[in-house]
Each structure stands twice: as structure tokens, then as C-alpha cells.
Length: 310
Image: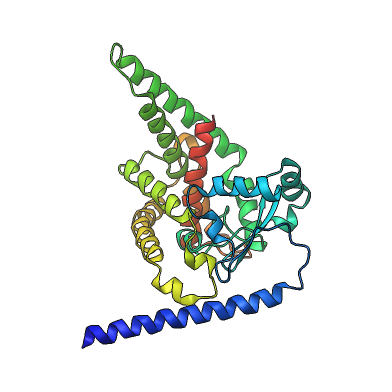
């Protein structure tokens, strides 16, 4: 009897959801009729819009096919999210350089919202006064001349260790991929945390997985007004669990740094800089532990990308 009631409830819930989405789609289609300057678009379906064009194969391959047919400036309706696809160098320059202030906002997603503590980082924060404050801190404090110089000393020290390690392995097979990855990881940890962490490999693996999880879009992102999807989304629960694991490590790092005085080579590491800024009462937006953890998260990822390029 209970199973029958549960089955009926699920069917009713699904039916109500479909009716709700259809109603929303009809209302949105009526409101969108006044906009006549959209770029070309392929045929669309009710509710899902152009999502069916991205099914099968890699999304960027599907987008490449669509731009060949409809031109380099394409409009797609992905659920409730209006999206513009640009594949022309000239148009990209217009958007990213000439019209940069008008197009500077970041797309919102549940992954970014959860992993970066409600957009308290620098990279994914909305283009607003908080972002301007964090950018100023990044330029004047995190990447100050003194800190950048100390990072150079860290790089030299780690490269010397790598050379010694390779010399000691003379006549043996060396996996350079692993060696270079260990090098960049050590440099990043020392620049961010002031030392090579005991559980460095575990933390980096978790950060890498978390960034991969946060980078995608789910149905909850494509239908933001349908709050039930946010509750039922299994991806949201996985993201929350991952952030909980990272919280335990990052909280311990922050607490440990509160007892420290200075980083390696006489300079401050990134965590120490953020803790110092936390004491600044003149900031328009006070720095909290969540701000620090969010900035650590993206800074670690960003610094590793820089090391790969170097």
C-alpha cells in the first residue's frame, strides 16, 4: 500500500513539474517576442529550447557544426538560460575587449556557488564592488613585488631539488610527467601555504576533482526558477559533500597560519596575506574565513596553471 502511494506521489510530482515548466516556457516565449535583435538561431523546442542540438557527441563539436550553418554569432536558448555563442575572432575581440564592461559578468551555476562559498572568490565573483575590492587586494597584496620575489626564490629552490633528483636517478628510467607535476605542486603549495603540506597530494587531487565537478552545468542551472530541481539534484549533494571535505583541510590550514609569523624567505605566503587583510576594519566588505578559503581554492588552481605555462 505504501509503495502504491509513493508511486502515485512521484507520478503526480512529475506531472506537476511538466505543467509548471510548460507554463514558464509559454510565458517566457511571450515576453521574448519584444526582443528582435537576437543573433541567428536553429529551430527550438518548447521548455528545453535548443538543448537537443547539443545531445550526442562533445558539446563543442555540436557548437562548431551549428556555427558553420548559422554563422559565427549564434543565439541558443538552453532551458531558461539565454546564451550567445561566438566563434569569430573579430566578434570575440569586440565582446572581450571593446565591450568588456558590459560583458564582464560571470555565468552563475550551482557548482561555482557551492564550491566558491557563494562566489566569494576573485575569478567567479560577479562584477561588482566586492570583486573590485578583491581585485585590488590581489594586485596590491597577493601579487605584490615582495611576494612575487619570494615566489621566485621558491621556484629556484624547487627546480634545484628536481635537478638533484634527476641526477641521482642516473641510468634509470624517469617519468618526467610525474616529476614536473610534483615540481609545480610543491611550488604552488609553498607559495600558497608557506610549506609543502604533508597531505599535499590528497589536497591537490581533491581540488582538481572539485574544480572538475564545479565546471559543468546541470539541469538545475538551466532551469534556475524551478527550485525543486535544486533540491532533487544529486550533483548538488555531491558538491556539498566535496566542499565539506575541503573545508576540513582548509580550516586546519587557516588555523595553523594564525600561529605563524612569516612565510619562507622572509615574505608572506598567500594565506598570511589574507589573514592580515581580515584584520583591516576599513574594508567595505570584511574578509571572513569563507573569503579566505574561496581565494585559496582558485589561487591554488591559478598558480598551478601559471607554473605549467612557465
